[in-house]
Image (tube, rainbow, N blue to C red; front, side):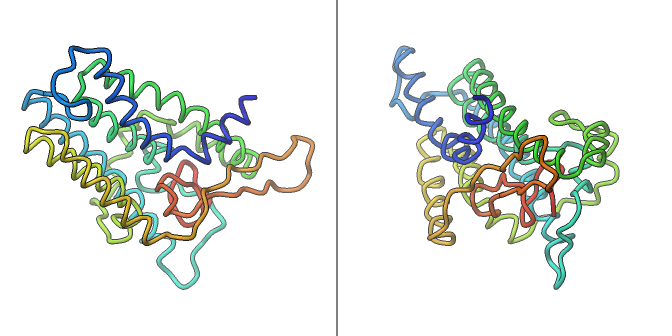
Length: 262
């Protein structure tokens, strides 16, 4: 049952993340004194600036994780797609993109109140735990002791701070921005909302990001969940991962992720 739920969540994890925004806004509105509009609650200027700072940290982490992988592995005539990605930001945390998503959407939820933000982040963290468990099962079957060794050295979530010293600069690239264009739209909307003191500004920026993504990646399908073979199988597992344009959180040969196969 857990595997089937995780498979469904893996396939639709980005859609669930985006849909949770209006659900949160409406829930807060219906359970509060209903000041302002349901999608744009009043907030203190300090709250807006804190949210903007968290969102900026998040988007830099996401663009760096995506861009550095593309620059060091995929941007060549013969990209190496036969090993785990364990360098750079992946030496500090196995899931930099999931960490980035929690930070970014936690920043959005902060406009509705600190406790709502905590609950919102916790909800998505629990979802990601199931998804990551599915992904790691496939990676463990594929790589065995090599992946186990990586997991022992690098935390799933909390960064290993001593490894940051080996990261040389922040990789900002057009590939990192374009492949995460919806997240860039969310970030821009949060910053604009903080400056204008009105959360309504997140709507046009996020919609614009979604329209750009839909145009660039039109005709593609939702990613399938990794196929976990029976434990008795002697054949290597077939790991079906999405391309980078599905939601920027995939773990395939063209996009970063925890212990990514590239």
